[in-house]
Length: 242
Image 1: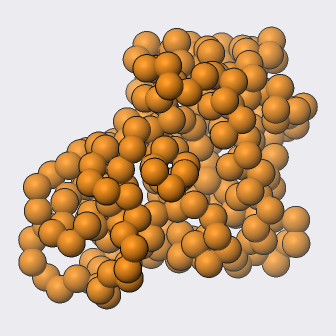
Image 2 (image 1 turned 135 degrees about the vertical axis):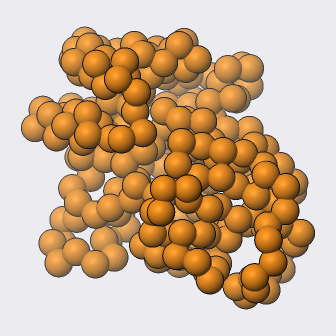
């Protein structure tokens, strides 16, 4: 799990369409920074997400736009001149992680929200894959990347989105929670509370997909050495049911 790239801010989705791509002016105040991106306020109810590591946001833009077309809850998004930037609507509300931490959402309810959002995502056909079984995969799906807006939960941070078997996305999400439980003190209590009911709702996980998810997490350049070293313990925690 990683901190959100932008804190809670301004009102929820705007009731009218916003204008098209922004011209060149510099963005407004810095709202937040994640492991790979900075998020800046814009003056019209939007934010600018700018990647520091040169990540190309073109695919992310296409994925989010298509999910919106299918009614999936993601922030509205607009292109910008640079390939390393996205303009998105500015959301309000706590993350699901924050809501569990303060007790406004129970661990069981949080697990149900996560499982339902994954099921909804995996019901949408893949954008480019020729395999009819493939779906869009978030691949960084956890309570910090779900915001509870006045209009309902919204899934953020699609930089790692790809296409493939839904079982891999489910295994990765479970592994991220388990990894947080054993190696991320700031999220450990939350993860240990949410993981058992989440695993029950997911049902049996494919061992091969857990192995694949572990390899992908081990190669993630944004993770620290202690976080990577904890992966075997995280896999064992999943095997015990959380």
